[in-house]
Image (cartoon, rainbow, N blue to C red; front, side, top):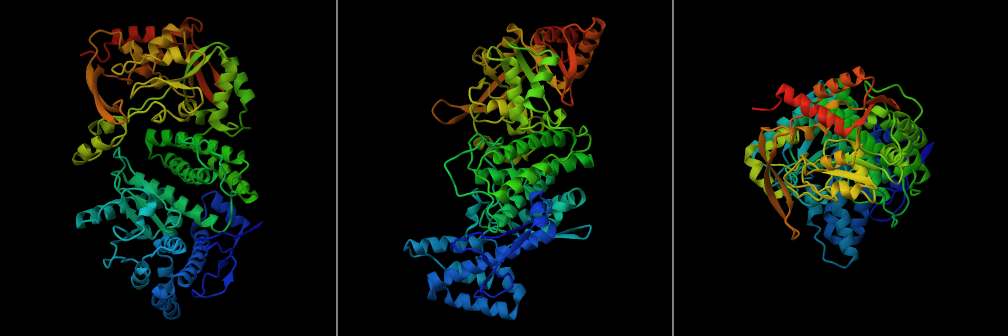
Length: 637
């Protein structure tokens, strides 16, 4: 298969000019061969395919420069002639000017302004031609780092026009110490990529020339961005953890790479009014935006898969892999069913999905994907039935491949439970917490001097839109379903779908995580069951209810951000039981041993797909946990 480019730039011209000609050269044509196309779909393009895409970008920019000369006339003539002379005298320097990331954005904005009859400023073009990486007279700081012979050479774009295309607040110009910190963290991130993700390191080094420093997000978390008209540039805030910076480079590079491919090969049709569910955000997305997100999250899935293989990521790597594997697989399925992809787009997303489904170390042997009907049959065989109310903790990865991903799993549960049953999941948000506690609630620390600023910017909890944190794909999928209801606790909410959803979630006291005034107690009253699907006793949230029933349990102060009732936000501080899940694995093992001695008791063990499962009554399990905690004095001063 050969995929021939017909991408359109700001000029609306089709085709692309030859990548080695001067600005006035006649147009040529780029060809993306079958193997190149499929390798790009798998995010395994390497330096050779990056070079192919950069050739396309060079051609696009030649067309833009020609269009700019025609539209702006004498205002850009001197700079244009200088560019022609530079091509003749020093082709490498000419190519550096032409591939400066913001030439595309600047030309596009200027052409639009001129077309509207506005008096557009064209002085940026002259400055860019004279000094492409010193747009305001001061050169961008340059960072060059080497690991095992592989070189990353980028400029820190801390000033200059058109960087607002990244859509996030820009950091101010870097001081000397800040430049050193960027250089140090980039060096550490580069070692992560070279040693554990060499295929991504090769492609990033071949494409990335510019890194734009951003301010951290409102909650203090990392922010990164790629702009559609800034090929070769990535914007990011500087995280404390170099692994997260390495991940951000991979994620945003893939946005850049897909943008360059779309300039050559249309993968979806013209924009329509249709919107499609994106598992990682609350608002439905156009097909083009969903494709961008899905491809970038292929890189995220691949990154955490490799961290698992290296044995360096610990529980975080497994949690992140399972989350993004499920989200990306589901989004790919949505795209393939959207009807908005071109034939080339269908081939691209099909290959992308194959890449998502590559097994990771320790994954069960591949079998035929589980269907909705087979999942329902195996859930019934385990003992789940119509009318049941069930609290599910799950690992979708443990199930093995599922046709349609998490959405199919939810459908299978609803088929089994029927109209009288209720599916419940835990949709906690412990990340909504004071920055001083982030090592425990988020898994990373931020410097103390940032705490006050982060406290001012952390978003308020919104039960309708705030995503769950650290509980996997299935809870988020349930939360996003039409008709799902969520309790309003700003840190420990539950979401329910089905006949009893309202009564289970309606009353959740804001100062009671998981006690008598939480959905856990309502679930006990309803005779609910718990299903551990591919996960162990250590995540059995029901055991927390037992903690509240022991006198003298330690208490602590919690803080989080909530809505103030007037469209604003406010910090809410309360005192509640200090939650401690550290003995849960031992509590569950003892409960299971007792059940075996009693011939099974209330506990049923079995398999659904490739996942080991336990199904049991919530009430009996909580009663056992209360006795165990009292006998062992766990957590009592």
